Image 1 (spheres, rainbow, N blue to C red):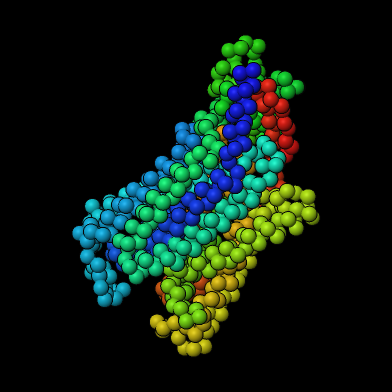
Image 2: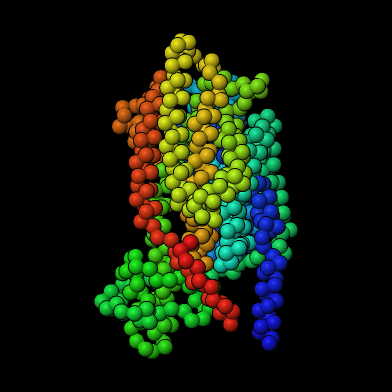
Length: 573
């Protein structure tokens, strides 16, 4: 009776926590965090170039490496969440790391002797005459930057998973809300990014970088404090142990058993009968893909001690966990190029904006605020998609989410291809305007409004909405119970590789093409060819994605309630 009473109490507490009320704290935290991160990302290039006196090339490289590292470090954040800390405390830890990083940057910006003397009224040709940042100043800058990057990576892995944990995916009535949660998580990210690209960029531009970094620090302090106020509302997960270790054990055990014949029945494979293997109550059913890995679960002896050697024998659930990661790798690889396209738009669109008329309804728009255009599209599109499109698609397909995650990602990849083709057309038109008005070498803005760039950016914003939310939902839902945060981090890992790959492609294309960017003048360079090339590569990438997604098999889950509770089976998700 005491055990059943304890189970009933825990179940009641679980039902009282979580849900939409808890995710509101995640949404507000995301707004504060993305305000600081995206707002600074949109204008840090100007800080590196104008305040730290780095060259144009070095400033661009530092920014690209910083952005790529921030997303890449989400793998570290995901590993920490799943192995050592709960998702909530991981959010707090990495949030405080971001606070420290922004505080260091703010200190450097406030105190003059921690930065090189700023150049004033110096032409581009004389920039090499400016005072260089000494080793101590560079070290302080990098320390602040990469503490922020580490904090961002941890937050990106922990926060989306923390919010999704507030809905029990083993309960169909709750699981149906997980895709909706990711839609609104993305919506809160968009709101924060809009504030960052407008208000924070304005502070950096007109009040100074010292105040800008101070505002960023305060945003992260507010994010951590607000998250902590929701502690009693959250359903808290416990770390399951290292997923990387469990996956490594599968490969080692499979290799050791390579000469062992496969059993004819499932009884010949080892599976958990209690809750001690770190996988919670989730049992993954055996699949027929990657049969070599099944050897890791073959029972070779009848001795009880045989099942206590994790590097020699694994459970079927553990083997299937490893298979899930292997199946995900092609999906990760086929979505990297989308982020490479995004990196191009973020870089070149700002440069294009500098050559155009940036007055919109009488307001002069800073070039660093141009990314707000796709954010406005996404701000409108996310609620429309969630409240109108999903219910309509649900009636047509019978799928609770309207369409499956991989279908949603595919739509995003198609839109990205269209966006790059439109970008090529707009750039071709911009160059024609420059030639027609004899302004090819003129520093004055062309008689063409900056809103033309909003077409390509708006389409890509829609692509990002479909793909990013689809990837977050896909990796979270398909990951096993013991690697939800690491699975979520795969989304940001794809973004990181996309940023790094963009630099490589620009250099390779410039060398192979004979110098599409050799004149350092967009009116003479062939940026339109570059966009058309990316449109073609995006189309090829979509074909590769179709092959990968058609080959993928969704996981099949059996949920066992250990202590006398009922057993629930879930088919392919």
